[in-house]
Image 1 (spheres, rainbow, N blue to C red):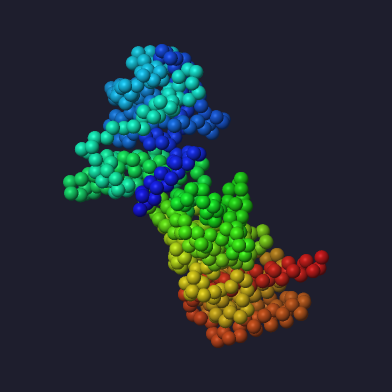
Image 2: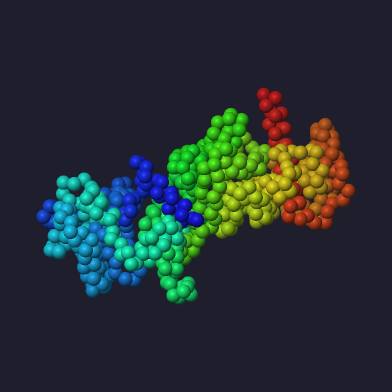
Length: 570
């Protein structure tokens, strides 16, 4: 299903006039240096295609024949490669192997264009066969080429594009003879085609090998079945293999607007209709706002949430298929972390519900909506992305897209960080509220303070917040409050600390000069304690979450009242 969807994406996208997908047999490749040749095959110079300064130089990208799959064997790319293949230069102490590489490079060109009379090909072959490379080795750019192992290709003097981009060569390269006796039924396209033995590498997956990794691969006898090895185990035709790998590499490219990072999963997405508006909204809904466009996420969420109110672009009735694919590194292979196919209408409803579930009262300076990255990192130790549990991102994404309850690991992660850091932050409170409400199937916890909520754990959280506030008012400028010392025990085993803290509050109230304030605090404590018969010996995970929300709501209510009072005074 995944390969079929990617194959269909390539076929649709490649038919568009402004498509940036490579034609069959080609790929877009950054080539730092071009070897400039005269029409009779003499060396005329080296072009440095890079732009920028120092180590940030970026090479220009050209359309070149698709890279061959290499292992330990000698295999030359067509019309481009590193200096070992192009010039037979040995810098690794293996002169015989380098010479073999160079001969393979020449033979690849000669055999592929045996009947071509193109001036560019003739110049390249003449240059390589005469092996007169002394002028190249004396060029000022040569030491850098040899040191970096940069890729090179050829340009004919007077042309603006490389030899491999000449229209006649592109047309000739895409036509490849297929032996009809070696064809089979392709599992992706359902058509007869030559079966690809080794699939090209997929690049751009965060954490995977920089040279690329494979989604489909078999390299051990244990993976063989019915005497079939490598590509024979999963027969996919050459055309379908090229289509799905080209599409996936394009979606994963650095400049792609159709990829985001979800935990350890490099996530790509696309609609069955090219250029669908949901493709523009999706990065803002789940990705982290960039420095160039910090309001992207807010704008995208606002557009989706306000659609039912404005009647514009609500998507609910849109039956267009939408695909979301998450890929994670796994040694030399790529693991499929998650794969979801929904209609745009179903997706819009579920995403809107997700952001409604996360709505929580917060300070004015904090973000109105939380990206998926902010949600995940709120559960990570030290707030570092590398500490996000590997499967958590995919599990949360599945809950959002499918409209399912959030994983228990998300709730436990938020509560664990609160107990470790003694701080109920806005993202953590939003996570706990969303998790508990989805699990119960009703809006048990509100966006802001709910004085009618009679749940014991929720009220105990409010009680703890009031006791902390009394301590702060009695000791202005205090560095550490009861939260720093007692939060973990109060939220886990209330009976062990809350009776002591209630006695301590009498000492703090005695310090307050404003008797009206004392009366207000006593009244608030009485309202909260109403209905609480006894302090529980222990609170379970969900009740610890309710405690945290009660504490957070009550603290936010204090801050809101303080700001309101200040504004009235002004």
